[in-house]
Amino acid sequence: MHDFSTHNIIVTGGCGFIGSNFVRYVVREHPGVHVTVLDKLTYAGNPENIAGLPEDRVELVVGDICDVALLERLVPGHDAIVHYAAESHNDNSIADAELFFRTNVEGTFQLLEAARRHAVRFHHVSTDEVYGDLALDDPTRFTEEAPYRPSSPYSSTKAASDMLVRAWHRTYGVAATISNCSNNYGPYQHVEKFIPRQITSILTGARPKLYGDGRNVRDWIHAEDHSSAVWEILTRGRIGETYLIGADGERSNIDVLRAILERMERDADDFDLVHDRPGHDRRYAVDATKLRHELGWEPAHADFFEGLDTTIAWYRAHEDWWLLAKEAAEARYTAAELGGSRNQMRAPDEGRCE
Ligand code: NAD
Ligand code: TDX
Image (tube, rainbow, N blue to C red; front, side, top):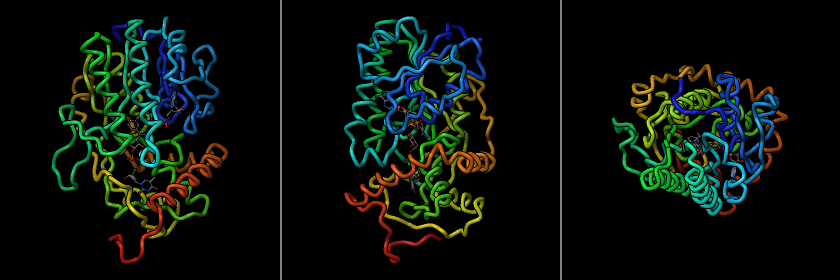
């Protein structure tokens, strides 16, 4: 049972990868809740992601979180805002950071102001990237007390948005919580991101591209487990607190890529090493003890390879969902190559995989 009313919630970014997973999760698991999705439908937002959900449970409002007049009309009458909307891709932020600043910082500011004016509960969805990175041999993991040390334009705007949420809670008493989650995977993820990019490259006959030496480590969690964790924090988390979300899923990029290649019956070396991402974070690792102990949360998709199998199967079966987006995403990568040669193949002597 939750101790405050969550009958009528706004989910920003509910047509994106993780936000739409949360909308589907709430509709499936919490029958009394109505969801208003506020989404600008950028290149990353797709109404298909929430298609087929009951009309009396989910309403889509197409709009910008920076639109104050829209927020003034929309927010009254809702119990909570669950804030997923963001520009979310590191590579895009390196090519052009301006929209990241506007949506991630200004957009969060406008939502906080609306939450303050109308005394609405606010949950802010953020990332473990605000803590910077760890060395491969560092025995520690990120905790809620780790210092903020963002590396990329994307993660610096997410860090700024977290700071706003903390200040709006302390200064104005906004009933806010924050979650910082590790790398998500699963169906409906945009094809610009690592796992779906590699799967769809293989499906379209292109060679996967691995940045740098491929030894960077990400801590993977299935998007379904992120959704269940956000629900627990929204309904039972302590106001003013931050919770890290992670499922002990540390893996190197090259191991993940080789697992994909093996499952798709391709040779283990059937990929290209390409120039590294500027400022590329080496390793993320999340310690989710607080969430597990305080709220009793546990991931349901603890087997990464099982999750990878169903994710590959989903992309195989949904080419109509991703093909146009794939062409556009690869065109963006090619344009970025012209600017920074980030994705150009390295000369053979520049680095090899072990
Ligand atoms: P996504 O890019 O797939 O989706 C973002 C959604 O936000 C899209 O539907 C887009 O249309 C919408 N949007 C963008 N700008 C908007 C604006 N100005 N107004 C209204 N809507 C707007 O992103 P995602 O991967 O689903 O990430 C969702 C959230 O989770 C982000 O806040 C991200 O920082 C956070 N997060 C992501 C990960 C991950 O692994 N992808 C991990 C931790 C946290
Ligand atoms: O083609 C690629 N080749 C490659 O080696 C791509 C797209 C990525 N990579 C590497 C870079 C990273 O080390 O794979 C790793 C994962 O890359 P992304 O999918 O771009 O994710 P990342 O930069 O780790 O950020 C993600 O997790 C944290 C999300 O995009 C963020 O929104 C989230 O906050």
